[in-house]
Amino acid sequence: MTTDWIKSSHSAGNGACVEVRSPEAGALAVRDSKKPAGPRLGFPAAAWSRFVGAVDQGRLDRS
Image (cartoon, rainbow, N blue to C red; front, top):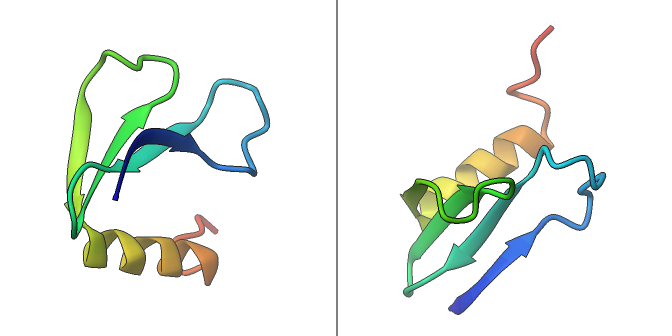
C-alpha cells in the first residue's frame, strides 16, 4: 500500500502518462499526470493486474 503517486519508468517525459497509487489494500487509483488535481479512477487491484497483463501480452493493441 502506498500513498505516493507512481509514474511508469517507461514514461517518455512527454506528458502523456498516467500515475497510479494504492491508497488501500486491494485497490488502485489512476490519474492523468498532466492534471494531478483532476478526476481519478479506482479499480480493484486484481482487475488492474489483469489489464496490465493484457497490455503486456499485446492483447489490446490496435491493429
